[in-house]
Amino acid sequence: MPELPDVEGFRRVLAEHTGEPITGVAVLDAGVLRGVTARALRDALRGHRFEEPRRHGKWLIAPAGGPVLLLHFGMTGSLTWHGAAEPRHRHDRVVWRLPGGELRYRDMRKLQGVHLDDAGEVLGDLGPDALEVSRRDLAGLLSHRRGRLKPTLTDQTVIAGLGNLLADEICWRARVNPLRTASDLDAAEVASLHRALRRVLRDSVEAERVPPRRTWLTGARDRPDPVCPRCGTPLCSRRVSGRRTVWCPACQPARGERGR
Image (cartoon, rainbow, N blue to C red; front, side, top):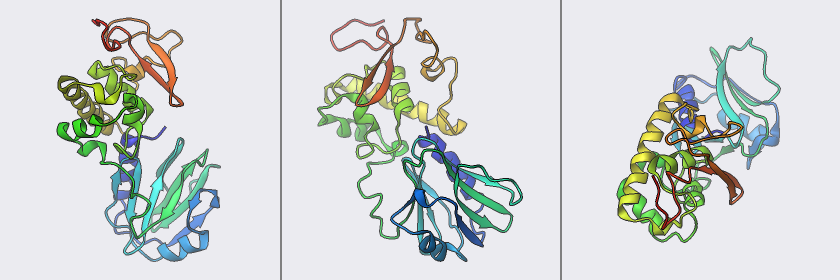
C-alpha cells in the first residue's frame, strides 16, 4: 500500500525527467481519471514540460507549465519509468511519452487516480505533510481529538501521509497504545511519538517504502504467530476504523497498565 515513503520514491522518478517535453499522453483506462476526460488530459499536457514535482502526504504534484497533474496511488498504484519498447503491464492505466521513454501510472484496483487541477481545490482539505510536523504541531493536532490515536494519525485531514503500516510502526516505537484517545497523551508521550515519527519516516523515505526489517514491527506483523521484535511478547491485532491494527500489549500497554 503506497504511503508517504513510496510516493516520495515516485516523486524522485518523475524528478529525473523534469524539463523533458511531453510528446504524448496515452490513456489506456479512463477509469483512473478523476474530474478530467482522456481528451482534456491529452490536450492539457501534450507539448508541455514537467517542472520540479513535489509531494504532499500521499499526493504527487506535478506542475507542467500551467496545468498541474495530481496523482494519488490508492492501495496498489505506482509510477515507473520504462523504455518505449518495453511491453506494457496489463495494469498500466496512463502513459506519458517523453523523448527517452515513458512514465507509466500503474494501478490494479483503481481506488484513486489522476487529476488535473490548477486551482488547488483537490488538496484543499489536507493536513500538514507528516515530514513537516514539529513536536509542537503534533501536540496541537492531537490535543482536541477525542477519537483513538491510530485513526487520528491516519486521518489525512489531520496529518497527510501516514497510512496503516506507518501509524502502527510509529506507535510501536513510541511505546504508545494505538487505541488510546489521542487527546489523552501527555507531553512526554507526544514527544516520544514525534521522535518515532521522525525516525520511521527518515528511514522509510531512504528505503522508498516502509521496510519489513527484522527489528521493525513491519517485519513481524504478518508472520503466522507474530511476536514483538523488541520483547518477544505475542502481538495483538484487531480492526480499528476498518483497518488492521497491530501492537505489543507489553511495550504498548493500555492506559493505567504497567508495561515493560
